[in-house]
Image 1 (cartoon, one colour):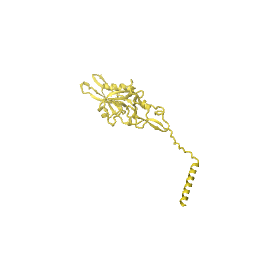
Image 2 (cartoon, one colour; image 1 turned 45 degrees about the vertical axis):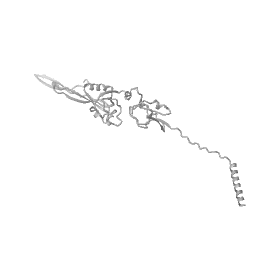
Image 3 (tube, one colour; image 1 turned 90 degrees about the vertical axis):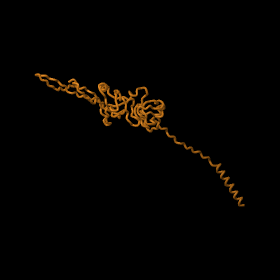
Image 4 (cartoon, helix red, strand yellow; image 1 turned 60 degrees about the horizontal axis):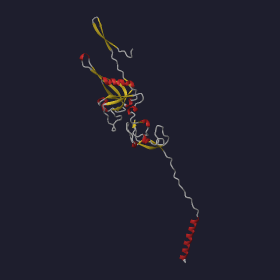
Length: 263
């Protein structure tokens, strides 16, 4: 009797559960929509450190997310999706650090005259012969500023030994390159070459050429703090002339100051 009651209770409970399951209204499935983040903007940056004069390849550039407004000088992926391919084989006109946005005004195309693209408007480039001794022991590097020193041997009078005279002819001149090197060595060592290319004003070119033709040229390295000074041509101080005056059978020597600027 007890077993029959337990069996009856189990059947009743099962039937009630089945009725509740079949009779209950179906619950609509809750769809959880994942919030889609708006795609961020991307700009072209250097993927590794680049030295001035380096040739870019595709591994040197990558796209990087950018928040906020993109400056017009930067290259965005939305406006230039093919920029990595298009800028391949370009030359860097300045150094880039890893992650720095790449600007087209800091690049130039190979074959368009790399050195000429580095020159500011109105400037000229001229090469001078140098040695380690005439370039501060070889420690003058591209982009340093120097004073140009002219040294010439002047013959003595009446067969006497002459003297060597040196003077500064130009000040605060930028060094563009040493031989074919336009950047310092990767390990920071000196660049010793036979030719230094200087950036000069058009009127300074003749001064440098004349100095090389009449003597030797040395470069004196300037302190970085003095690079803001204006480049100038150092004028040579005129020595007074000497006039011999003969009067009454006696000769005397009189110094006459030199005239300048035609006065």
